[in-house]
Image 1 (cartoon, rainbow over the protein chains, first blue to last red):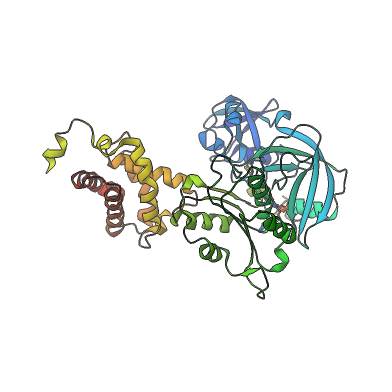
Image 2 (cartoon, rainbow over the protein chains, first blue to last red):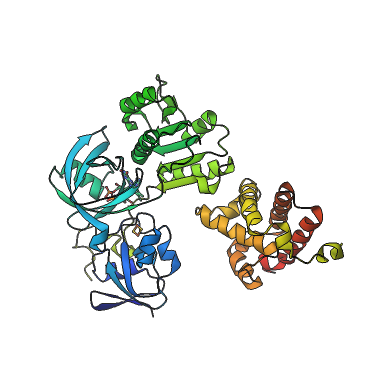
Length: 338
Length: 129
Ligand SMILES: Cc1cc2nc3c(=O)[nH]c(=O)nc-3n(C[C@H](O)[C@H](O)[C@H](O)COP(=O)(O)OP(=O)(O)OC[C@H]3O[C@@H](n4cnc5c(N)ncnc54)[C@H](O)[C@@H]3O)c2cc1C
Ligand code: FES
């Protein structure tokens, strides 16, 4: 039977159970969110034993080499001795400011209390003092003092609700990461870029677009930002100003439904992209936000001729509670006392 | 038919261009397969990188290259699709795209035919018969 050792204690895993689920089931606190191998908040390190390759998909080589793996994607064959992500991957930070960008989007600025290196467009795991973890993309650029996140309010959302309603400047948090390969790679300044995202999927694209422009990108940069209706658009004035400063930037705010307005396109995002960029073969695409949209866009762009190597996508997968926690955590403790 | 290509010393895989040719072929082939309504539903796996890697392993195998596939894996790998209705018409469609991909990349007709013959030999395993 597979089992894991954590802080001196052995825990048996059920058939097909992940290290994350096995530890959570026994009450060990491990930060986690998506439970699908996407957000990297459940990063752990193997001190001894064999880590299945599947548990290291998407990790940087430097992390793999040090035995890091994703606990939610790790179903070991035998014995594994594990430890939580080390201090070397984490940095303390404090909330510097909270500012509404729209009714549903909050700009969260953070001041790291140590070195924190990243590329514009990558994402971090944000850990609250009690261990609640969620991933957020960075909208800032590495040379800026503060990190910037754009957080959308999710109804009933633990982290977004806390940030909107309770957190204040000075609040301590911990950052883990960065992760993700949605970032600008210099070297082909003339290659057209297609940046597309919905909702707060704009956050990384905002960072990437400014990074590409700062690094002298000369080819067209198409930035599509999709929202259900006009209230979901934000940073519109900033992006229009950027567009007038850089003629190669084509900013296209789009809404699924609503009145025709000057400078806002109405329709489905994929249809608008197809209309504006009918032949994207040879381009590079960076896609962020709603998972369904990101995955279907990726497929459409691949079919339109983009190489898979030229499509980078970060799907904002939501959190998934562990199976046995399902109802128990959210309902009152009094029901079904067994 | 068989003789004139088999005469060649190098393997079929090498004659077609080896690994670089497989890399060039995989995206073209996968794109054709995904855009074909008859069969695209069998390729709905959202993990496109992984799907592409599988397509490449398949191409490498039918071209006679170093491949991890065995008949047993083919059976196991397709069993769930057979349950979903995978049959000869779908197999034929994939073979059609395979031939078209290689032809498009300039592979000479006799070699394409040889590849299709190897693919044909996997039919029973793929369809779990
Ligand atoms: C790589 C990555 C990058 C991300 N970047 C950002 C970012 O830049 N900005 C941002 O706002 N978010 C981003 N997210 C999503 C973010 O990590 C959280 O999932 C989100 O903020 C909700 O957390 P919460 O604690 O408020 O809600 P939770 O308490 O986690 O969720 C409450 C309930 O709502 C559901 N839910 C959560 N999110 C959604 C959703 N989007 N649609 C439908 N149901 C949902 C949950 O499954 C749960 O049932 C990213 C996610 C990933 C994986
Ligand atoms: S990657 Fe494991 S919880 Fe998200």
